[in-house]
Image (cartoon, rainbow, N blue to C red; front, side, top):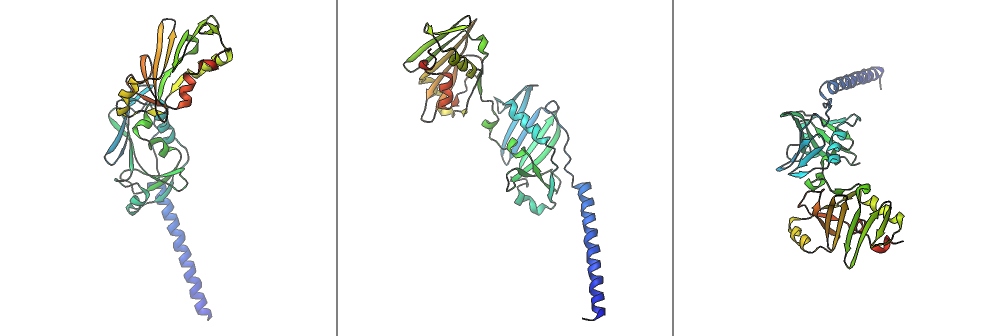
Length: 303
């Protein structure tokens, strides 16, 4: 190869390097100006409505008070609402991965497949974000702002925070009790029926001495009674007709709570008979071990 040919090749390589360097600078400059996913800093005090829409399905959460939200007419779990704001506040910088509409369907951020997260406050839109499919590591998700062609890879809990059915947003607390306020408990567990009563600092089971440590653990277990889920509407009437267990909690001024439990093949259906807590006519699902915890066998409490 002649010296002339080598010189031409060297010049060509220099030109290619200059062109590549220029394109990199231009692309970086473009990303820094139009490719930045800058979201407003929002808190629960700013927002009164959260909606998650996918196709024709929509879930709407509405603020009832500073500490209470509803979802589809039911009481929402306050912690679940808080997870949305925590996820939006994740500090990891989203990574720009695409900037062409041809990538929308593949990444799940098109108008048909994407989940539209909308936050409103005072009747005004505050944030709108299209959430697509998760990346292969399941810790990141593709997101896009409506009207923007840039698609980002978001690291954090955003997908988990919004990717849940209506029941996943609902509050599963059946009741919350303060042990010091309880003066008596009546438990019906099939043929095992007993009354646990307090006299000062001592407890008696049907008038007999108890295992104080076991009673203390039982009272601690009653602080929060939580369901595993909710019963299908068709199971509601049967649950109320075939209760096989019952728990009645009494305070200084009378009955604080009464729950009835209907046994099923996979656990128990639970509903309120009297007292505060839960959502009135709602029938909950509880696991066997959780029901055993709130309606223990009398022998487990004896001294």
